[in-house]
Length: 287
Image (cartoon, rainbow, N blue to C red; front, side, top):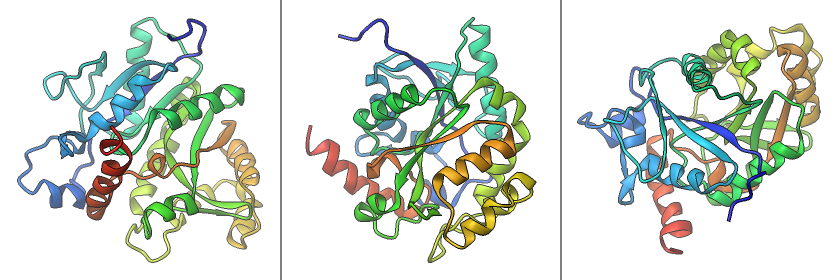
């Protein structure tokens, strides 16, 4: 039974797509039958179902707000909100539309959690762990979940994930993060540019780094002490949190979640098959 005094957060689920289509969809949906990667069949369900079902189990979720799909595109056995926004709208525009939708419902919140739709290995246990860390470390406006690189690589060798390399450990961005409404509104240009830079990263390189993002962050004088330390392998995660907080006027915190499924999404064509194997093992076979 869920406790009535549990802190609850709205979750924006990004379930649209890029234009033009990424190589993944050209490989697994060459006939263009599916409007979004979220709707691609995956182990007997739609890809998005695996993630939404886990989110819907969490007592910390106030509601699921889908950005990029309509009721005509997909329906579910649990309550969801369909935020009116184009499937291929910019990520920053989707966040603003979601925020406006919440406000029109008369809902206010200190934090909005953002989720992908293409990490079928995510489980409610780690989702709840993220929320508990969120609550325990209050006072920040941007929380980024991070998965240790060795945890990902142990399950998905050569994963092709983007790695941030720190003196106290290498980490990979996870599939949930949180932003304050203020951060969403004042950092629209930053959010848009970071999204563009993320797409510039060569995911097929032998050693995946953060070059395009570092070049953008490095334009801010507040990060000039951090960048040389990072390149020399001397920067810590705490150094990065402080520099980003100062540079973007947004107090930032990284939250570590040590579970491979929490950091493995489906961006590359080869991800489809290896995530099938993984989800079969941790969810289907254990059901």
